[in-house]
Length: 60
Length: 450
Image (cartoon, rainbow over the protein chains, first blue to last red):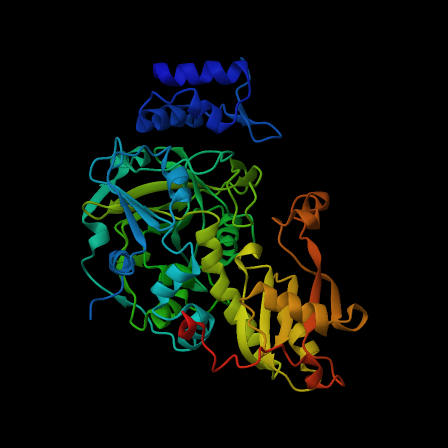
């Protein structure tokens, strides 16, 4: 897993966030890099959604 | 005359002074907010991290620009749609196509190389909002529709297939056999092609021939590189792949819906992309929600209203589906009325799709003028005689007032509909509606006294 995907994973394990909040936290990251990291989390199928549509990851 | 295409339409907008060119570098996270503030359609010429790409948006987010696409006046749009759609022209297949100037297959497929915008605050991810989606069924042939795609991975998107549609039907048939459904997504086609794709045609009616009718020329199609499907040859971008046979199991949304409401998370299939083709120096089309979707819906609803009135033997004079009701839920029409036809017209218009609010006036009322409409409703309507309520009609999930969440999974909502007959009531002399006119109005001119 890339360092950016690892950071995203840690953030979503700590707290559920709307997608725009995750984006806001990473505005300095070029958009294609952000999307690739997001795709890494999708590929391992760990992203979950709460009732408000926010993303979170259950700690293992 | 040059063929109609996405780029010829951009030229038309330039000629009409309806296209703003933004040359400063713009990030994909800024595109939607900037487009929302522009009065014109917008072409972003310089996209950060995406050299060679441009992004065009809000191309038909006003009735004026839709009229440019149709090549007629704003008031003629519905009538033009109705007459042209009655003369479909079958598509033709070409060998070489601009949309296949660049081809990426297999491992080379990478959606992160395409400038996918983050459009709305509560969206579940970046979206491809303006699609011309082609699928095929062995028994029913090719079908075209518009479906949003949410980025998931460099090779996968979500796709909203919740509402009943022909592609949903095709997908269900493939799913029943445990098979994927091959589909192709074209992005960046002429607005008339988008209009045809969004038309809820009966399953055996060709949207491709309808597109030809609207254009007045055959739509040129090209065979996909990896699928037994054809796509518009002049598209800017094409995604070829398949809907995985997983059913409605993957989270998708929310997305800023055409109802002007942020939707909720839905459960949908996944689209896996096997091949990406595009033009050299491609232009990504970002369909601006909700306005562009709503203005594309309006002529379809209006034409259906005209057709319903004619079937009811009522003579329509003008019709409009207001953008406030998303070009979809309301219809206002003026008619040349004979006794009783106000109610006939109300009944006919309430039968159109999910239209739930209807006003019918006489032809002396300009239905595009809200003050005129208010006047007609104030003085020609008796609520106990002229309001028609229809209960238990078909509805759409995305209307919160139908409380579809109470229905459980797969439940289909119903709605009540309201029609107002604002025509002059039978038995009331027309002279009672004689409008105020100032003395000498037609011959005494203010400019003569300046």
